[in-house]
Length: 462
Ligand SMILES: Cc1cc2nc3c(=O)[nH]c(=O)nc-3n(C[C@H](O)[C@H](O)[C@H](O)COP(=O)(O)OP(=O)(O)OC[C@H]3O[C@@H](n4cnc5c(N)ncnc54)[C@H](O)[C@@H]3O)c2cc1C
Image (tube, rainbow, N blue to C red):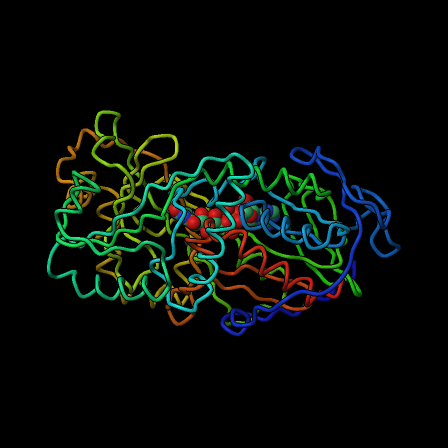
């Protein structure tokens, strides 16, 4: 098999250029598991598995675009592409048996209003656009979204400076209905919350992102896109003017590739062979949640958040009502010893060694070892975790918190030890990558998908 690698821009350069669309395509490939759905629109014949192999490719399938990853971003990007170009042959490859198995299915379920993000950043712009698009989509698809509102609480004077900076940011981001409130109004909104001052964002809401992802997938299939689960992408190489995508179930020849691989973003980018040495790496941060027992749920009406520490991209342990009525407390943020390790005891030697040997991680750890140790301690000690939560809802008792779900965040980290704060999207005229898409990427999914679809159609010349 002859293969050249494709060239991929990385890092900050790529993040900056996000521009509008252009051109054309065909009809999709047939698949397994999740892909029983229609193989949509006509056009170029070559569709299903083992179809129309070119001379250099043996029995490889052919398609216009392969999307790696069936999380919310891969699905949203597929949807936006097919909306813009219904004739496109599009194949989503997901390594797990079920879509949305990782970050999309293990998050807080908050539809963020855009309080936190650097004004003008992709996060700030796409969160706002994405929230509106998501709410419209949910309405059309009868997916419940509850506007619980969010209270970001300053507990004492020492937090007021950070609080003022947050208020400024939220105001600059044009968050709707924002209100600065004192203790009396805090207690009106959340009768059991502590705090001397708070930002009230009435437009923040909650949704089940797994359900949203499933609805995106239905739309993709209805538009002729093909989704194959249990099919892992193992290589991406250049094949003349096309791309050969190696998978656990045989090769696919695609004209172009879009990688939305979440926790594997850096490894999938590295498959293309031209990742530069300074490309950011993914460091997985696990976050554990506790669930409130039924009798404690009335202590939290909506969403109670701390004032975040601006040095970190994580928002701090919060109390979150779920769309199913449960209330979660969490997540904390500790180094995960395995990329998809949801339990404290999950360890992958490769993942752990990779993180520990990465100069970026060592720099981060050297700088923030105190914070890291405190997080680690809270991870092991329920008492410490509960004490943190009780600062916000003092009436909560330890026995009202039971161990709940966990999530692992894909956080891109530069070699210099700086955590990439903004969404990072980039690539070449052959492959596009989502390199960093932490929260609020689920909220922003349709907007991130729009940007990627426009980029793809503009750059790929299909
Ligand atoms: C604990 C936690 C809380 C969060 N809270 C919120 C929140 O409240 N609101 C919000 O907006 N956002 C939140 N987020 C962020 C949000 O969940 C993510 O940004 C979003 O889900 C990212 O979607 P994705 O499609 O990029 O990644 P993922 O959902 O991780 O999907 C990537 C997919 O790629 C697949 N894949 C990887 N490699 C391969 C391969 N080689 N071949 C085939 N498939 C592959 C994986 O199996 C996976 O299914 C939270 C995240 C976490 C972890």
